[in-house]
Length: 189
Image 1 (tube, rainbow, N blue to C red):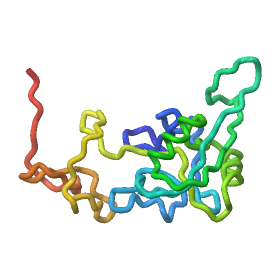
Image 2: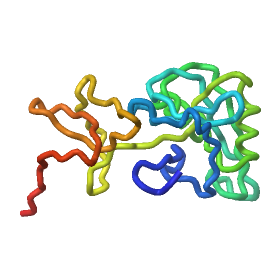
Image 3: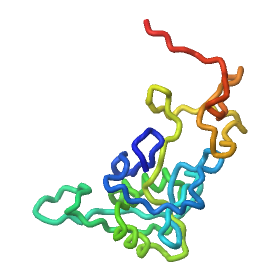
Image 4: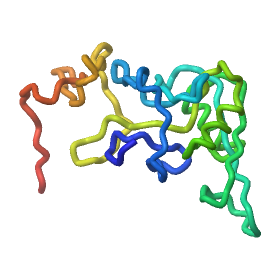
């Protein structure tokens, strides 16, 4: 899951996995046309990347704390309780629903939790979990929600277009990073 800006992160923490556990279906982890930046869990407990705007049912989680402290945090002493929501929503709407009514979208950090999440949903269902990634960052590492993609400009040919160009109308397209282009340089005052 990595630690660079394009790494998969858990919605609940905004961080990459503490344990390094993952259950990706490698055949479907393809970042299709540069648009699959949210994750689902499928019928066999394997994760897939998917388009965040698609509508799926989803898994939320709460944390059962052990001990006297009533605070809700994700630690090794807490047990996650997965809740299946049988309502189709986009990933961000599902995230908002889970944060309002529970803790967040499902966070899965080991095989046992993956099996518990799998048991919480209908066996053949594909549902959202709390993994996401922000693939586009500025070269200085900063993030921005602003996008100005040309309507057909985001296609990730051969899953290898990881840089961005801008046309004269200021619309963006993904591009192979080894293609030479003129560029803007930020001026420091």
